[in-house]
Amino acid sequence: MLLIYTHKITPRLTYIFKHIFVRILQTPIIFTTKVEEFVAHNGPKITYNKVPLGKEFFIRNHDLLFDQGINDRTIKLGLWEDTPCFFPTGEKSSIPFDIFAASFYLITRYEEYQPHVADKHGRFSANQSLAFQGDFLEKPVVDIWAYKLLERLKIKFPDYEFPTRNFRVISTINVNEAFAYKNKGLIRNIGSFLSDLFKFNFKGIARHIAVILRIKDDPFDTYERLLELRKQYNVRTVFFFLFSEYTTFDGNVSRTSNQYKLLIKSVIDYAPFGQLFSYYTMTDSKKLNKEINRFENIVNMPVNKSRQHYNRFEVPKTYQNFIDLGIIEDYSMGYYTHSGFRASTCTPFYFYDLDYEIKTPLLVYPFAVNDDVLQKQEFTAKETLLKIKVLKYEVQKVNGTFISVFHNSSLSDIQRKENWDTLYEKMLQNG
Figure 1 (tube, rainbow, N blue to C red):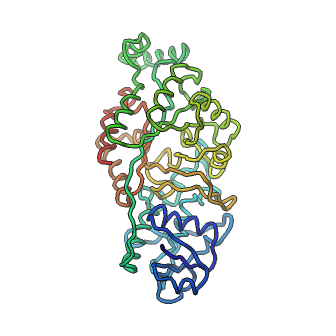
Figure 2: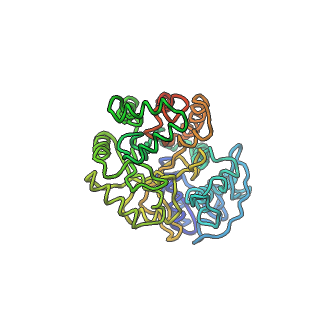
Figure 3: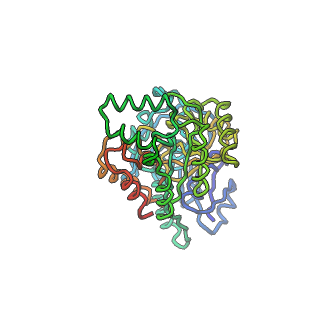
């Protein structure tokens, strides 16, 4: 048990200390504001204060964890050895910056509460983030900081056995277009034919006809393959189904399609699932609730996992709506335009609501890789795999959770220049 001494225990402080020590370092902690209790403790202990009590392990605190609300913060980046950091602490501190305040700033998405210019889809853009501007978007610096802190604690307390966690992989599959040709309706099928004809895509026309006549399987019907790979590599795979009205941005087959309903039921018999909420649910709780109710009537069980289509969510409003409607896990934390770690961590974390200054029951699963992002960068399959491996290695170094986003259509051969089925399988290999 690690004892933390501080002059004041606040919700912010307990939240981030537990994320660092309990969720990342697997080390139980207790807090005290009593000097005599701290002095009497024989196990490992840390002072988090403005001044040390003696020669103990001491981290000089920044004011952030004792504030309330959102205030302008001047961030000046420095380096802790080779890792970017901020909120410097001075010479007396055992480490050169306040790891807890800096981690809190990044994980709570403090900067997304502040005034910013949204992109054309109403999202906070990656290039406005501190991580992007500081060139550490592709590193889970909160976890890296935690492990560097652990190294120093092991030196200070050599007799204490700090536990370690295991690296894991979670593959998430977005089903926002269940089929390429099937169940699309007459008008959409005619539109697709005309589009292929205009492009002189006679191969596509032939395949389209073969699928409609049931001579060939629909190319987006890759679900058996995905479930097979899930079982082969023992990788947790979560499917997210879009179940909404058709819009410009939500182009799935009709939610009234019996074949789509049967598909959903057949997949969730073998794998965990969640709901991919439509484009216009970002701040519309009524629309969100309607989509949940419709989907629950199909699956006959509560929906508790979510992802936003186009990663279109607003902190804190979207998350507040999720919590009100019983969602307990969200997988939207990432950028639609960039790979990397939006919250600078590869450890699932509970959403802290800065509006109400509370830790919420919503567990956020941050993803590092999105196949749409990689496809837009026009990498070759080899370059894409290398990119994935680099990000995966960053997570492996800190025994974190590597989460990817792929689509059922990714494993087809009509939207990708190269064989992404093989690429996906290689990503799952070795953990």
